[in-house]
Length: 127
Image (cartoon, rainbow, N blue to C red; front, side):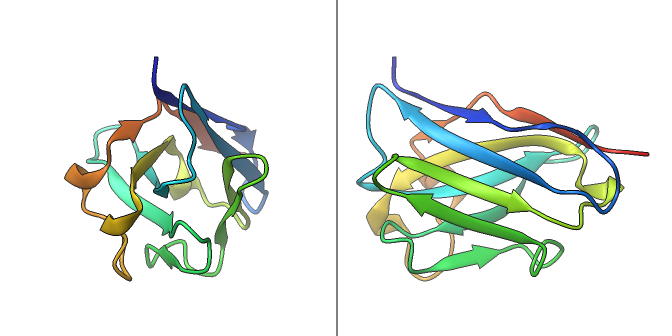
């Protein structure tokens, strides 16, 4: 079964940090740009960040710019989302998704251009 698997979510206090990981099962990420998304209760899913195939280009949603860092390790076939200075409004289920690399054209691929999605990992920021 071809799928993405996220890990690293949990409960953290405001101001704390978490690192999420995204790995592929049944295929490899070496032809894909990867994005991170989140969906909070009662809200629509939103794009958080994305990274090009090479890892040399990244994009961030305004509210996470300067606090979150996306990266990838081709040797480990893993994409990471380092989240620092977390706020209660960052509470959501976080998903990773993979799009064919040519859909990254300087900005994140459109949602419909992602071929694979993970099941999500819960991030809760609360004191």
